[in-house]
Amino acid sequence: MQHGGEIIAYRTMTELAPAGAVDPAVIEAAQQALLASKPVMTVIKKQKDTGVWGGNLLGLAVSKAQGIKDVGTVPQYRRLLELRVPRGGRSFKLADRLLFRLLSRDDDPALLFEFRKMGSGDPHAESWSRWVIREASCAALAEAGHIDDPRLRGSAHKVASAVSQFLRSPLSEKPFVKAGKKTILHPEAYPPSWYSVAMLAAMPSLQRERAGFTERLGHYLAQPAPKKTYSLHVGKKIVKPQHLLLGDPIQADSKGVAKDIPLALHYIELLANIGALHTAPVATRVLCRLLKDCDDNGVWHPKNLRSLPKAANKITYHTFPLATETKTAESRQVDLTFRIALIAKQLGWTLEMA
Image (cartoon, rainbow, N blue to C red; front, top):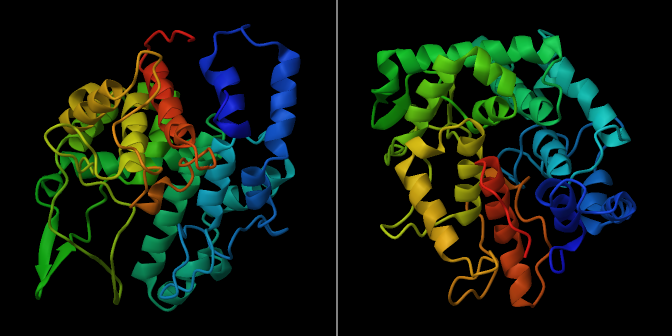
C-alpha cells in the first residue's frame, strides 16, 4: 500500500484485503488515481481508433526484423487488464470488436497484420498465423471476463481439442523432426502455448467441462522443457517460436533461485489457476524459495537486492512490473511481494494483514 503506487495499492484493496476491510469511498478514490496514473495513460494514449496498438497484434517488443515498431494489441490489452482499468472503458470496447472478429472465420488479409506478408500466397503459413492469432485473442478475451460468450467458448473448445489431441498422441513425447541440420517441430504438433494455458486459467467452467484434459495438461507442463533449440517450418519460412510451452520453462538452480523471476511468477500463477502447481517440482521449488526470502511481515526481502528483477522473456510484459521502480529498496520488493501474496490467495491460503 505504501510503496506499490496506484496500481498495486488498488489491487491490494480489492484483491488481497478481506471483504469489507476497506471503505468503498477509499476504493473509489484509489480507482480514480489508478486511471490517472502514468502506467495506464501510457498504454491508453498509444491505442488507435481502430482498437489496434502498435500496428500489430502479438509484438512483445520492438523488432526491426519483423517490422514491429511497438508492443502490439494483445499484450497491451492484457496490460490494461493487469493494471485493472475498468473493462467497460473505451479502450476495451474498441479492442473487443477487433478481437472477436479475429475469432471468426473472416479471411480478410488485413486481419493478419504483422503476419500478412508471410501468409500472402502461402495457405499453410496463413492458416498457422490465424491459429496463433485466435489463441492469443482467446486468452485476452477470457482474461477480460467474456467467458460465457458463445463465440469465445466455441473457439476455446477448438483450441483445447487441438492441444488435447497433441497430448494424447506420440508427438507429445517426440515432437521434433530433422530438416537438414535444423531441429523442427513436427508440422502436425499443436502443443500448449502461453496463450492457450492463459485462456484455460481464466475459464474455470472450461476446466470443469474438460477435467481430464486439464489434468493431462498439468502433468505435461510439469515436465522439464527440452533444452535443444528448435524452429517451426511455416510454409516457406523458418520461424523461431516464442509462444509455445513444451514443458516447464522455468530455469532454476537446486536452491530454487530462478533465472527469470517474472517469468517464473507468471508461470506459477497460471499453474495455480488450473490446479496444477502441486505436480510441478521446479515451479514448486521456486515458490518455496521466494517464500523463504520473505520476512516476518511477508515482504519479499532477499539478500543483496540491488535492482528490480529483470524479465528475460518478454511474454511477461503485461504482468511485470506493476510498480514504478525508484531508488528505494522497497520499490524493488513490492511487485514480488504482491505477486507472492496473490498466488498464495489463489492457492487458498489465508492471508494475514500486517
